[in-house]
Image 1: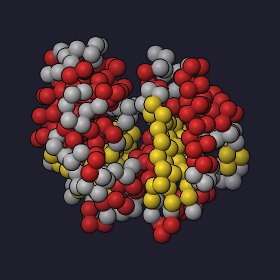
Image 2 (image 1 turned 90 degrees about the horizontal axis):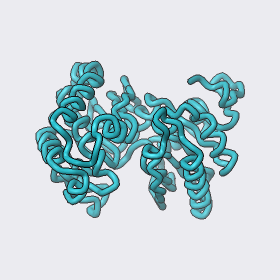
Image 3 (image 1 turned 45 degrees about the horizontal axis):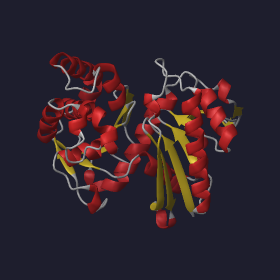
Length: 336
């Protein structure tokens, strides 16, 4: 059996095609389309016609690619940039009309649960009680659990791209006042979730996402060319030093640092501040980088629970979908 998953994030639309024989998603092909949707949205988060056209083209390309690789129709979803758009229902409807792919959104908590499942499977049961952090462009997902699914999951508006646009007014070196304001915001938003994780006393922490992968490389972890099975760990003290290094440089010079790519150089500082603050408030001294994240979580749920689970977790969709109680629900009737 071969399945495919497409997610539209703040920066990139990504496709993963994987074989699932033996209960493990083994990737056979990946593709990505760099759209940088978060930089094209209106001030209120609305996705305009130009960005919507690019999104539809990318999803159509992903569907064609999946078909060439003999995979089933992609399970497609948009993350925070789509989920938070005031016109998200129109966006999903247009994507479906233009591509034939029934794209949807998930709640932030569902994204956290799926990411936790993927990290749990990657880390194994020996990880014990585990906290998982996943930072994207628009949101930060946090989860904690002792088993297959988390006991606690939360989604916070602490995405690296969102915070960069809110607090850093130029690509020059940030001012002390800007950095202080960012730290205050992150501490305030993370206070309750951080206290909950500290109280749960996890024995292991895992982080996912490209932002955390790049920050781990900056902190001394192995480069990506060594493959996903290379153990990568990021210490909180090293991340604190990374914040200082990034804050002392303008955006173009950050891109010269190990692991920091030009497209993500601007948001690397905000991501480092969120990561360091989260680890500190949660009482975590280090975290392991998990290469499996939400896309693998979706695949694992398909493997373990069958394809029907998807219709029970979607939040909004551009077409009629089965409701958990067995009725049909139109996108226009979906809860905000």
